Image 1 (cartoon, helix red, strand yellow):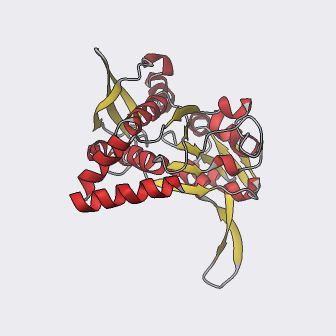
Image 2: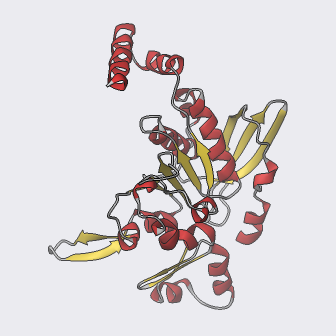
Length: 286
């Protein structure tokens, strides 16, 4: 059953922490009980690990690896290790370092659809989970936001800019979803996939559970948070012990001048590349 499939997936201790790891191969495997699996080969120095990991429903795209350079590849490997260990992820980097590009590349590599929640300072717990929508008659109502939609669909929910949220909001609003894959909603509940299948084995039907507003969290669901580096004092002191326990963290240093040049050369002609590099250097000086 599904619980046995999940138990066979690797744990974080199965991966070495060598910074020289690369993702050398990603290939699809057959679907098992609503869970799409892929085979991921991680090469770390002289050690090769091939593990099974959840993936999305879109075609896998290994071509994105050629668009990443230096620290971006290292960050992608760290995200992949956490994903294979069935953990949610947090990517921390300065503005402009390429967080969005790395996350999108990770999703394309594994065939995931991305659903993004853009975080802002005045955001409430309700706005993190649900949103106002308008029906065809012009009436407004509350409906599931991207985070909850991703949870039941098996997509990646990107929480963009969690450093902007009020301290304690993220852990209070979605801490259980990240740690236990369960969440109490105003009109129902999200439950872990093994709990949902236990209810089915006990005689409940899917229609009965749906009528009771009990929904399973998809086993392939992942949350990826992005944030700017924390500060010990001031408004950027967002990193708490609660958040540290909810996900695996990866850092992304800014690209060096050589990596910037290599990336731009692949995308543009020589004159355009030089002009863009000069413009970027001027903006940094300001």
